[in-house]
Length: 282
Ligand SMILES: Nc1ncnc2c1ncn2[C@@H]1O[C@H](COP(=O)(O)OP(=O)(O)OP(=O)(O)O)[C@@H](O)[C@H]1O
Ligand SMILES: [Mg+2]
Picture (cartoon, rainbow, N blue to C red):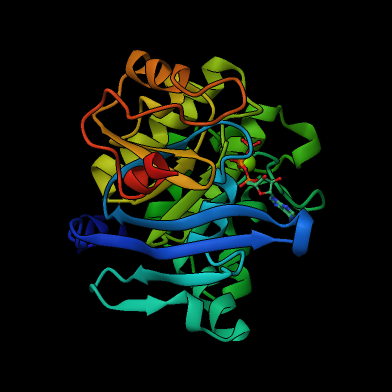
């Protein structure tokens, strides 16, 4: 018998999982308007772990929220690609369609764990599937719970769990429904280094062993080192694109941003990603 967990391994693990094309996001009007994203083009690869880094205010969360359909764009297009390779354009969807797509195909892990206080751990983990009327795959669920080390905490409510345990519940919740892509905005930002390493190790394995696609915003070079690729943002543009990152390489790159978070010049790491040329011309 093939379980869904085993079947997941046979999913398409190459190609594009999400794409942004000429995405601009402005907040506010007139003199107080802020351009959070400025003509961003990016492809997120399927079955890969992509980290997004950059100074505070560079547009990391905005990019992630736009890719995940949590925020609208001012101009440009966003697509999410199914495991079958079929593209869905988020930026042309009606609210209801978008809500369904987020619910069924996208997983989220936030810095604040966003667990429901009245539900215990396992109820929190299965909540999105319960809402969607989907039955969790038992073998997969057990594996997720076992790997995040929560088997003996399933009946505990969030208030009875440590921060690290709560975040592991949130990670298990994101993975439980086997979404096509998982987005995390500083998912280890509130964790001590040991809990953070456990969570990142688990996310890494879900990419390697199950073909999960994971996109993570982080400030932490050692967290980014778990990724296959690191995109660097500055002033709402992608200014660098690093593969096979190490904590040292990432730290070096971050040091090249000036005190105000701007990108002073071309990088020493290969080519500037799309957007870099335009940034240099300004
Ligand atoms: N709802 C909003 N209204 C107005 N401006 C916003 C809003 N959200 C973000 N911004 C602005 O857009 C820019 C990008 O913000 P964003 O939250 O994407 O940055 P970030 O890279 O995630 O920063 P941090 O590392 O501090 O989380 C910032 O200048 C921010 O002030
Ligand atoms: Mg942010």
